Image (cartoon, rainbow, N blue to C red; front, side, top):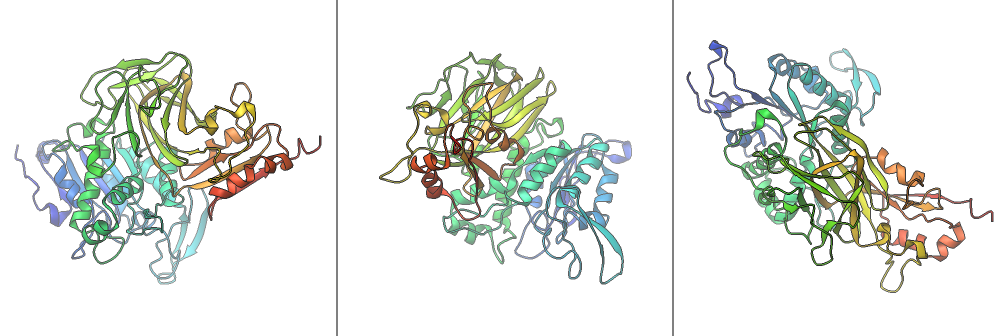
Length: 517
């Protein structure tokens, strides 16, 4: 067997190593498909796919960078670029999918590469003004699901990545996210298609914010705000490699030259400053994560831990994967809290068990339903991301909401983000919590038919509605039982909403039941 170490990798966009295919041997292959942010030939720019190749162990895996500049999820398919990749796929291969940058713009005329916005089944028939050829255009999510379905049919593992962020900052010093559109649609398509998902948009944005605008502008970007320099590409490649190490895929075990630490991305591991990273279970914590054992009870000095209640059980399955090698479970619903300031938070949960199946429902704060009966087979894990809104009674330096006695001390009004794990066999392996200042907020005002009900079996539609939105939108439920429109205003509930609502947010108001009395 002859090993050709990285032969012409920069010319061909691949590293073909460690096997003689004439003898029928072939290493598992990671295929990269996407646009110029993954691979570009423009001088002074580099896509993250090129340095990603150098992070892979050439004796364990091949990398084929088949991304093509200027392509969208639509044109990568219509130009038969995907067909070439699909026909090469073999069982055990991996396909990384990242599109979105070129999916806007015109459907016809010009470059005519846009997909329809969204993740539904809508279509539109168009005729190319240059060729006269008719084409049925689908949504962005539809094209991603097409790649997912066809990759799985060949026995490959599809992994959808949200598009890397541009070097665009808002007035608050935050990188502009895509969590309300292409990032969200990518997550939804991955979930619907049964693919893994990496929120690359969020993870890279967090790194940029940690390094600061000046470093990002001068080191990571050059000629424009979309394409990275060699240094910027390396940063993204390391985050991709680190994210892949967190997935429980046999092809990727030992596929990287060195283990990368979560702290390399500038993400704090110290509770008290978001983002927070928790590794649940009695075993050793994964690098960059804080260990949470079943005995980790919440108290103010620590700032995180399990709430009083049913017994939490810890299971240590062993193995090299520290993040998924142990977990916490329970025979009854149990709650975990983190002390955080008021605001929106994006929470990414890793659910599952290496040896047994699981079924986990996740409720936030006072029993807002976020995830419903997420099931995993033995040895499988899933990652789900939700958006949680945390608020306190404070309106300003002089006023606060006049709470009713039943509201005092409940989870909706404290200074903690609380997650409740329920279901036939809830299993939590890891949680990552970060600020989601870019998320849209939907505020609710109303009575008991809207308010969060703290005790089962009582529920309201306001508690159920979070289930139907992705991580780009957080539900802020300010409704309360027994309130009329008049009493809610007197209690300062509307003033509380107005003190935090921003352009682009929503306010849903439903009263009437108690106004009749």
